[in-house]
Length: 162
Image (cartoon, rainbow, N blue to C red; front, side, top):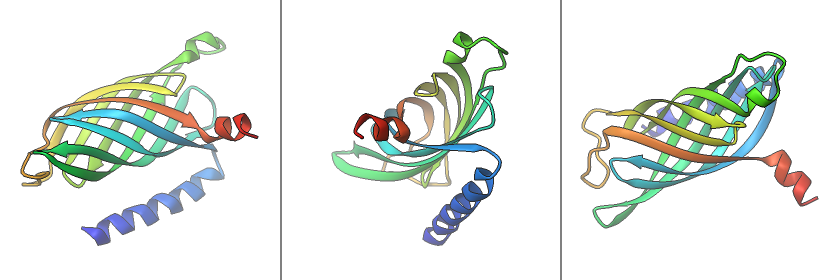
């Protein structure tokens, strides 16, 4: 499992350098809440890729932290999203995007849909499917998946504290 995870990370960073030549890339920090058959806090980072603001691609990695059966647990999470808004020449309509994506951990995979305000505040829902017999401290993580995420662009932080 560690070998696959390492290969995934290497491919992710190589692909981001290739895509960077064609798209504008922005780095973001994300914090959030995840309900996946229990409550998790989420902290991580995302890369946002765009040519124009009609279709935006995001890829990220984060850590889910929570308590299962009175034991603290941390899970790695990979995610990919596509944000869509096809309204042309109207800036106000680009305040919201429809979001389609997927997330995966070493315990489950969850396709999701939702809405994003300015690409910064996300509210998504989906259904998670367990990977084999994977359990977290004896609890199976399948079923309803709800995410509330705040994405903070690093450019904003850099300019704010400059």
